Image (cartoon, rainbow, N blue to C red; front, side):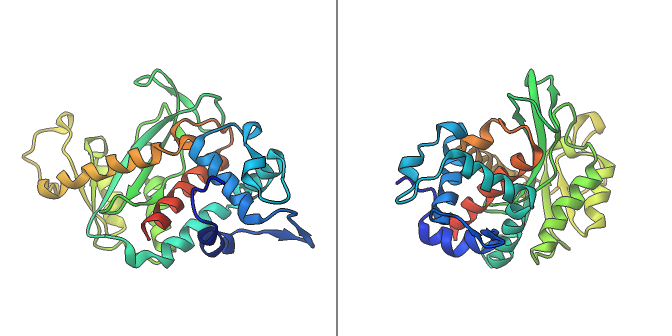
Length: 269
């Protein structure tokens, strides 16, 4: 049986953070195999109705509709993000917070849906979100995705509040953090939002905003380490369900991202 994470890891690290029973109802199959089926979908990007359920269950075989039901139930309840915050809190000592990297990412949305818009550079409909990683490239947090016609600075206060809020919920202090970001974030508003959280923005200067003779912080040696977040993007792209967005609901799309975060963290730890 194909596994993204071992059954033991699912039992110890994932299952405690998900609701598995309601008013006496219990799943007829092994619930860890339900989660493994969702992880299989995450990794392969296969459509729900094409899931090889006979290969994913060792005893009682559930239909793909039952797997989808569980996935959506946990999405609607916000349990995937809850799980992520709790695991981030548990393993925060494993993180390298000597500096963090921020980047925006547009994902093609082939079926449209919530928070989807046309992005001229990619010549397709996309969803845009900001991602924060530690010095090792491990994902830490993401902003609520917005439609693709918006740039990375759109509603930047809300985005930074969401990202730094996730770290604070996980018990990770943000005061004194150095944050690398590319020239797309070179704005006074973004810098002020970071500073309001006690974060020092190390942002590459945008030529359109003037030359390099400026008073803003830019430690070039530190900024050169930002390439690590590009490696993180490659890690995430290996999970086909987040490489291209097929989900029309925003809660599902966010959930897939948080599940990738969980898998990458647990593989590291």
